[in-house]
Length: 525
Image 1: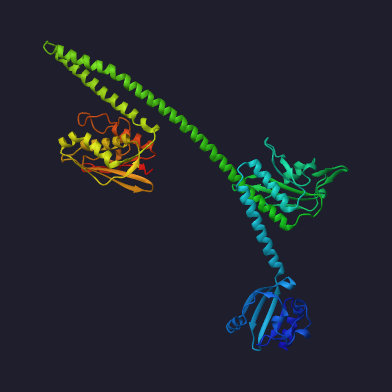
Image 2 (image 1 turned 90 degrees about the vertical axis):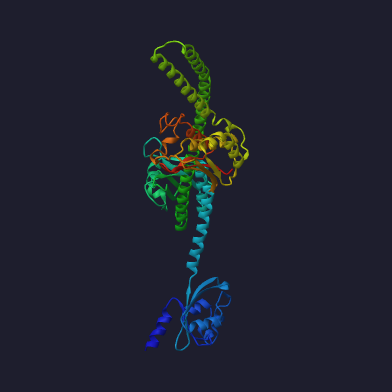
């Protein structure tokens, strides 16, 4: 009884089924297999299984199948080209031989092909849209692509009005074979407005039944209503409704589910492309603003340099006159009996004039720090530049008993005078701010991600790291002039120089009483 019931089940199943002996000959076939093979049961029984599906492609090797069947069932797909038939074959071992079930998977394969085709279509449209940076032209491309992909007679882009209201407005010249005859109709506000409220594409089989005054085509015999429609909102990644895509056709029920999915995909691609174009437009605007700001800053810096240079240069002459006059007056009064207070005032004038001359001279050096930037850079050997600086500092080095050493230094593109100023200011500071020991200064350089990072290490008095930023300010000092002479402009000059090369200078580490390490970075090229 169980065998009879099993045969009844196989006979009534929609899938083709067969029982085979171990030589793959038919012992039983159901009616569905007869229909699939196009041959009668009497003709199939006793015959080989493979002859029932002539032209089947990608069939596994029979020996491999038999080896696999000893352990488990086997599943494979095959295409019967003469019958344009895709079949899923399930083979299972039985005590009597082999059981085979064959399932028609043509619809599934068709859906897979359509899905691949849609993906390729949308990917192609996406690449095309992302290549367009002008929003107006981008939307025209969106309309043209959607119209072509769906066979619509007309397509257009619409969005809410710009006057603050909710009334939609049709934007851009409609595309499609009947675009010239298209009219949105008197009921456009209601129709297009409702289409902007959803989150997915909507489809109407006959708009003329839903809206009395819907969109239409102008013809010689009057208005021909647009019946079938597809509409999809274009929603930005941030959730803003940018507008909608409308496609129309005079034939009712023209658009399919697949075309609705295509339009939904095109709308999503359009949203990404519009957002991309908007970001590019904002980036270009920001770059333009930055360029204008940089140009304004460059002009302001140039004006400031010119003013500082002129002011400091023009101040030198009157300061020299003040100093010279004070010195002459001091000599004239040397043999005369003058009050001590007068002598004190005169000494103060000389000291103040000298300090002012030093400040003006340093201000002039600060203004001149970037004068070379307009001329082409040449590659210089940092070892040669350092040797020249040490020659300039020779007397100070000898007087202090300093020892200055260096690792091999690189060649790099920089104005030689700027690198010399960096070395001279940093080594000069190491000699000035020395501790009780003889100064020891070491210069090194290392390459880091396209930059040369120079370091100047000393064994001087060190700096409290709380002042690591302050020391690079203009005229910033941590000590009195009586303790250490100078105006406190050297590190500011160094910072001004390295920043002109897009580099930076910083206090790497320092311990009060044990020395400091200053670093500055310059580009390799």
